[in-house]
Picture (tube, rainbow, N blue to C red):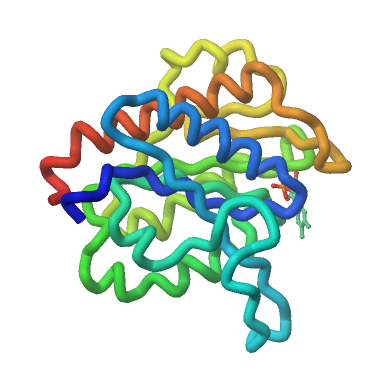
Length: 204
Ligand SMILES: Cc1cc2nc3c(=O)[nH]c(=O)nc-3n(C[C@H](O)[C@H](O)[C@H](O)COP(=O)(O)O)c2cc1C
């Protein structure tokens, strides 16, 4: 993959658009770092009829993530809406299909970060973020958060944690990201991109 510019995979699931908006802001932060770019990918919804196959290209938004997108990333930003304090099933389903990457150690020593959206202020953002870190640790990834040098962590009255960017989307899941939430997303994107560039020599 020497001819491909290094990229951070921004992989997310979003039903109402809040996590997608966070992903776009994190991607902007990544793209502000020279020498690396963001690759936005999503996963299809899943249903109880598990044999149903989604169209290979979604009607709108980011395209679906392939195993190769994940294999060759220089780093990962993983985003999910909170579902009962945990990540959403479509994202978990995708991750559960990454055994071959685990077996080959493809993600070892690559930096990763996580982000999430909830409806309510105390609706489980941190537990979701922590749950999302677990499979990434099994993959040998280096988990990074958001340091308090990002001052929006002090001023935010909605989302934003040192474990990763978060957003409080409200009961109708339609609240826009606040300035602080946007700043934290941007800073998380910049950080994961910078870390990936620093680690690139060790990954290849
Ligand atoms: C099954 C289900 C469980 C949910 N659990 C939580 C929860 O534990 N805490 C919370 O604040 N919001 C919860 N929500 C609300 C979602 O987190 C919210 O709709 C989401 O953050 C919006 O993100 P999106 O626009 O990317 O889909 C839940 C929603 C669904 C459908």
